[in-house]
Image 1 (cartoon, rainbow, N blue to C red):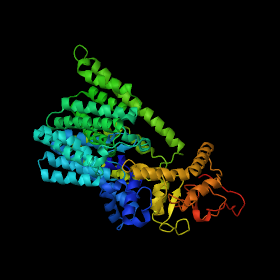
Image 2 (image 1 turned 90 degrees about the horizontal axis):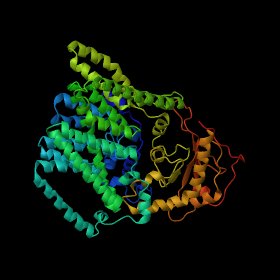
Image 3 (image 1 turned 30 degrees about the horizontal axis):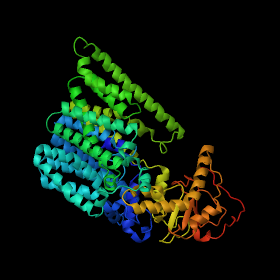
Image 4 (image 1 turned 120 degrees about the vertical axis):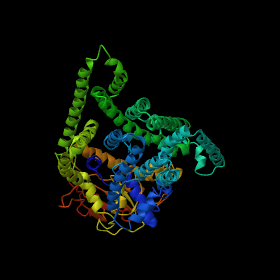
Length: 619
């Protein structure tokens, strides 16, 4: 529990949890969000039970509380599911190391800056991952009914993660019984449905049109050929680890490593052919490269199990070498990882007689390499901490230091080894000593920044600007903030780039988004220029919008014009309200925000009563 709380701190409603939060609000209040760009043509939430569940939970508690407690439940259930699988596949001490590896080591996969299993915020992804792992555990125990139920539930919560898991499970089933190859016959009716033009199967034979394809290219994760070197490096290292698992770990685990490699080949290969090559719509939406989440789970468990085997064989040098290779795989260098992997493969030859005297020297060299990498990591983190004014609320350097993989894994491992070797009284003392750390971890787990807390405290207050907003209002918020628009005001967003996250599922969303962007472009371009200027100057100055840009955004036409704008720059126009986000001590956390209503700006530009534009100072 201490490890879980220390390494998986809660950032609030961020990342994709914003989209799921909005999906739940749309289920609760469909009339309010019917014209929101993200929902009007059917968002990705239509394929998941999660929005319905969130809408039900919102009747019991406000969204911030639902997401906080939901994240705790998600983390604990994923932890339990991982243990459930490992207990069926590994010996006792080895599975404990593997379990700690899964909890403590980087869970990144795919486009590594975006995706990770067991995320520290609530979405349907970790829910589906947990259910898929429970399904695997039941499958290994030959409880087919429970396994099918778990996989079916996983598909209902997040079909993409469930399909990705199936790409690993199916090769394993084929290895158990070749009759599972007959599952390939299911492709024929799918192709017939696609040929008949029945949605969504028609997307299996229909490519993106050029404009739609260009728009989807902005979502780099969809196209494997658009991944960067760091993404390929993590993928390649996982392949190496799975191959090593096939070589060194016998029994059922070896079979699952083979299945994970086969699943990776199927998922990545299909993505490269059908999406990157043929640009087909349905395969792009299925994102079969997501098979990497489960392959990475097996790779991380394999890494920890190999470390256990090397330490059990008293080969600390090879264990440190493997950890150093992993550290470099998740870091900035590429050639370093390649050289360490080659050294790891050649290790038995390097230390065989008459070169066995090299073993202690190389062990110290690898230990020194890890130490130097940590010093470099700590130095970089300290610079960012200093830039944040040495405030933990702005930059939690404690978690940043703990996220160094070798440290994150070694610290709980040392406690585990101490526990295993201690007497009964020693274990009691160790438990008492760990209690303050558990309390500290629980206290620090909620890592929401002050501004995030301020926004979440203002949840569902459509009059927070001092002006009641009609339920039909559509709002443009600059800088873009769906979480504030949906959560605080509880109103539809007119346009935000985040709303285009599901455009690969629906061409209508792409086309409507393009129209709305063209309407707002002159105004947004001016605001972005002012933002860049203020960032360079380190303070907020005035930014008066071109009246023609305002008129273009507000004039009624198709698509429907937005009703309100929220801006951090005061305009020489009659405002409808204002709001100063502040902390519990009422200290400003953000520039004052101004609310403007299109109905009052549609035919003329009125001077501000003061005659001048007064910008709020930067906070």
